[in-house]
Length: 383
Length: 228
Image (cartoon, rainbow over all chains, first blue to last red):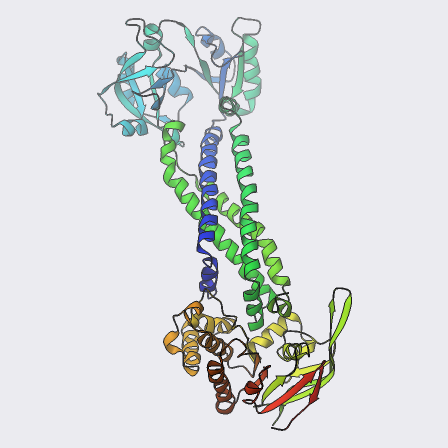
């Protein structure tokens, strides 16, 4: 700690250079925080996938509908405890950027297979009673300031209503839910499949996919195979996957997020390594006589090495902290993109701290070695 | 008076490119405690090399160097650094102050290697600055001080850890006559009143007159040892 004033003064010896270097590292860590945060948010969906559930979708594509008649056949497979349909509604509120993850479901079936959804029984009954009823996640309600009893209109990018040819679907909010264990899912909405199916102009009698709960997760693979076998050589062949596999393949529709994030960050930090390394090298080169004086005064080689490394560490850690702080502050802006409440995960902050230390050691290593090897009489003589 | 510096059969060779150059040849020297020695001689005579050996900045190729009761030619790099911190104060021609630190912080630098706390370091640095007459310039950075003032700060830095020996390499080489005389008077005071042993390299005969003893070097040897 007693060396901090010396380190601090040394760091700001060339203010402009330090500020520009600091800014470049801040921006790199801002990018790191944002991209890793998005990646982690996607990954969270995969990690939170329930091992007791299978997703049964069309073998051709997720966008290919399946007949509702499959439900009874799937229910008959041994080891299955529930089957619920879901369909992609593709909704937004007022503007396209206000994406709403709303799904038409049979609420009893759905709550049976996804028990993490917690809602009041009277609100479930109200949904069943109200044809245009909808149950909203609590964060979605908060976001738009909605309350139970409000009538809202969601625009579907896919489905057109039979009665007026409009893509605007009116809903009456009858309840709210929270998703236990994954608050990122508190931004969705569920409404009656019967309303959806009767009112749409096409695709009647079909669903997007089936969510199936199984008694024993160890039997998931056999049950998935048994389901798919039911529909082999039929016009509606299925592909059954665990919820985790399904979520992963769903995310991959956007591209391999993990690879893209790592590739971008790899390029950024590789460039930064040279930039910061060069700056540190230049800084040490300029201070050769000063480092020689420190050694003359009795600072050992190890101490001078430690001082140079500590300077690099101080620069990188301050910049990383600022970058991650900016990322944390800017994260709420991603809500519309991510379709829900997102925050910078602590794990990403911890990894960022680790990356900052590695960056500091990598960029400070060579200059520190140079400082260590410095021969006092040569340095003082300008050799 | 006991010897504070004792050099026996000291030789120093450098390799410059493919050529080995012997800068000091079998040199013997003794300096007693409280002495003020001026090392004089033409450029390339080996004055600074000898000073570097006495100050523990360099090692001899041959011979023994004992300073403040320690065979410093036998110390490891880290031990030698610690020894310098304890026993030697250095004063250079171009002051060699840290440009980003205030006069006070520059003077405190050697004390970072001691166990003194921040308050004690500050107090000792203030005392050292007072001795050199710069206590009112403590907050100033080197570029806000004149050459003479910077050299005074450098002297305060050399003094602050109360070293056994002060080694000065052309301490007035960059100063005008008047300022040089002030600095040399200060060194003389430190020698006479504070008992500091001083070894000073200089080209300037007027500067050498402030010393108690003048030693002349030529081609790597001491040519004479005039009396006080």
